[in-house]
Each structure stands twice: as structure tokens, then as C-alpha cells.
Image (cartoon, rainbow, N blue to C red; front, top):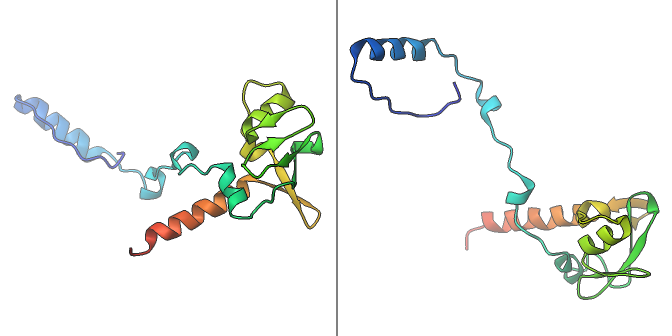
Length: 138
């Protein structure tokens, strides 16, 4: 039913016959229903510093939290600095929210042409380039 291969072993003829009949009645799912979506954690890690190194964001550029409640400046080493805190995109977001943790990739946004854009777009762009690089012959 789930498209899996298997080997069955049974000594008793009656059980073998019952199993064979049961398997013959099994309807397989459509192949598209059996596709598995990969998790975000399985994707390659992209350090925020790589975004800065590539010039996608510049040192001194401001990032804004969801709803513009907080802002922090990008530093050359790939960390952020706010009014009373400095650290990674995750640490600074967690500090502002008073939370034990924060996904800085979805928390922080930058402005382009008056629009707020999540920094995760930049990470996705780097990942797409990494995928394209892996597809090329070396």
C-alpha cells in the first residue's frame, strides 16, 4: 500500500495463502501521495555571516523584527547589535522577545524599495546556488 518492498516468510501453507490473498487485495496509493517532503533541518546550514560576506546585506544595514517593534544593525562579522544587546540573529531576536530561543531567519527583515523582506529569502537564495553548484560536473 505504501510502495514498500518486502520479503515474507511463512511455513504454514494456509497462512501463506491468506497473506497472498490479502496482499492481492491491497490497493496502492498514488505515487504522488507517497512523496516525502524534506525537513528544513535536512537542508544545508547557511551561516548568517555568509549573507554579509556575499554583500547581500551590508555592515551597518538595519534589520527589523516582525511588526517593526525592534531593530538591530548588521555587523561585519555576521552578528547583530541592538540598543542593549549584541549576538547572533537568533540570540538578539530571543533577547528582544524575552524568549529562550528565536529563529532569526524568519524573525528579522530588511527593507528594499520600501518593502519588508525576511532575511530567510537570502538564505534560500544561497541554498539554491549551492544546489546548482552541486549539479555541475567538477
